Image 1 (cartoon, helix red, strand yellow):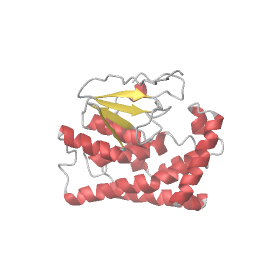
Image 2 (image 1 turned 90 degrees about the vertical axis):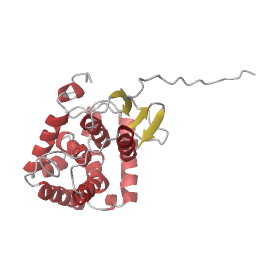
Image 3 (image 1 turned 60 degrees about the horizontal axis):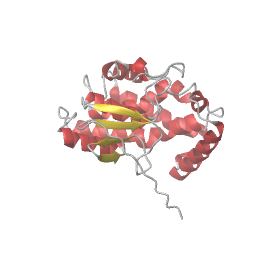
Image 4 (image 1 turned 135 degrees about the horizontal axis):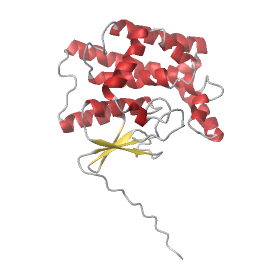
Length: 255
């Protein structure tokens, strides 16, 4: 009898550096994941030292993005950001009032818990050609399972029970509300960004850069201030943007 022992080698990473595990870079924005964009923008905003590890490995909770920090593993961007704020003694919202914090949080959650699902349906289910997935090289057999999973998940959530027209109506009302709230502000609450801008940008970035010709982008373009907001966040936190994208998979991202 031969005893087979499987040994896992844990890679050693620099101490006091956030190791951000995420999928590969996106074609037009640094990631096709809203939550990767949220978290990496936060790390840049907070000036926390980090390094990227690209791959399909998920966290122990089966999620990504996720981080390692000095042998600790954390997943879910909300818990990650809370942990990093405490660890590095950071408060990106220290200059805003309690009322503003509440409003910012409400819009963040609207986008993450409502708008996100409309975008998910638009990207992965309503696009019969699966343009985005094919563009980044996802095999057809995986696309089949992804589409089925999205259909089942959104149906269980509730939004998948609506017609396409109703889902787009929900999306448009969310964007309209956000546009009205931002108004002439440069960022969510004024002339300077707050922590919640990272989440807002994460969600809008996918509609603005990664709609792959689908309807979501058409709705966003109705609101000039939201489009300008996306460009402003890109300019503020991503000066190396072109090094972090694959430009329609024609180049390898260098960062």
